[in-house]
Amino acid sequence: MSIDRNPTTGVLIDLLGPTIEFMTDPDDTGNDFCVMRGVVPPAGFVPLHSHSDTEGFMVVAGAVEVLRYPAGDSDEIPEWLHAEAGDYLHMGGAAAHAWRNTADAPAEVLIVATNKLGRFMREAGRPMREADLQPTAQDFARFADTAARYGYWIAGPAQNVAAGVMPVA
Image (tube, rainbow, N blue to C red; front, side, top):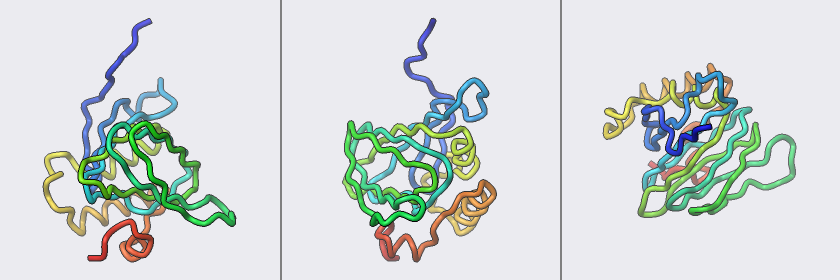
């Protein structure tokens, strides 16, 4: 049995700030999950969102803050969790969550999710050659349209500002 110690598909995308490298192909029928390497740049964020897919995150380098809302009709209060290299976070399906990097260095996270979520990220992202370009209104609209098609919810700018995910413009 051989072990692929450093798998990658060579597919790298920009998700309007954070980047995703696909370690496994979400279309590979031999895998039950998709493994990705995410990088959140300093001052970068992943907007508040929810989906039915379960995700696991291992912080590999740097630190992030994760806003986690409880799933369903829970009395729990949303909370910001601090995670740094070596920390593992599990997000159950339907739990709204967001990420932000308030540090001066990029944060690297290993993500294990469903193949469906991997396909969404691949489709919603932009080619890396566009990563240095400021996202346009069309980029955000395409991202939101893709999320809706997959049955995922993405909070709007006002909700993200109110939750402290993104700075006031």
